[in-house]
Length: 361
Image: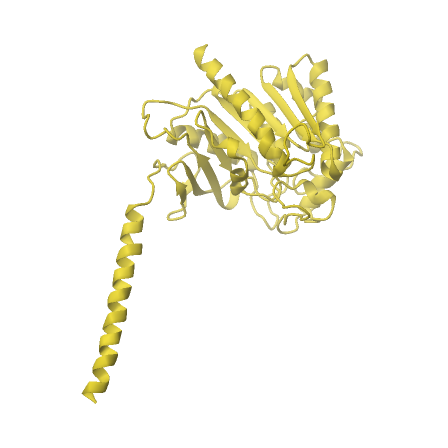
């Protein structure tokens, strides 16, 4: 009987030792080899979620925070210049990248130009349908939804406090696409003291357009087939999921222009002349294609914004790459990263040059 047990014991011991050896190889050693990233201290209403940090590399990582302003945990992805750690006395400009509807902070990985060696790129969570606004209704299934406050009064100072930024407007930009394109213009208008540069890519920027209001409503109701709801991240032939249904008036109130019922829409509208006038000292860039049902409408919105800026005497740059042939082989003029990635590749060097010029003044 003892003989029959011994082989089994030896096998068990062997398995145990093998497991211990494997743990020794994959456990503590792997942790020790993890790339080092900057330490972040809580503050400005943001509390980090322990053990939730995702380290892709020493210059690409995601932290997760909570805030009383927006229900649930929220990610903030950061791209650092490659020599950030090697140049401890150097400070850097910052670009905030706002993702599209149905998207996430990981969408930024689809645009290699955002991984710049001349600036820090910060990608805060904007929600599946946050629309970069403080919502009218704070008691939907999504709970608190003060996205403006989260980004502008919490994330921006939090980043300045924890990273070596140049904390002035001349060295700060806000850039976005689709839903984030309207958000980028809106944030630049709302806080011209923070941002000297803004760019909107295929943005739903004209809130007076029925098509744009319809896109917002479609995201609220999660009607993914309607206008494909200004999505920022779906692949070809697909539409994104915009999360739980909320009331159609949840974000901006009634969309109907009856007896001033749509006053919140009008107040937010990035294309409104009163709001565009706030960009007098801001470098404004617009990109759009004109193919497909979505970018056919973002092209109209971009034309309206450009024309109104011209009438206000505010310089701006509009790039309508139409069917995409003039932009890149990957671009079909539609609402996708095949166009946005090369558009950002065109924009980022111009932004870097503007940052560099500001540093010499």
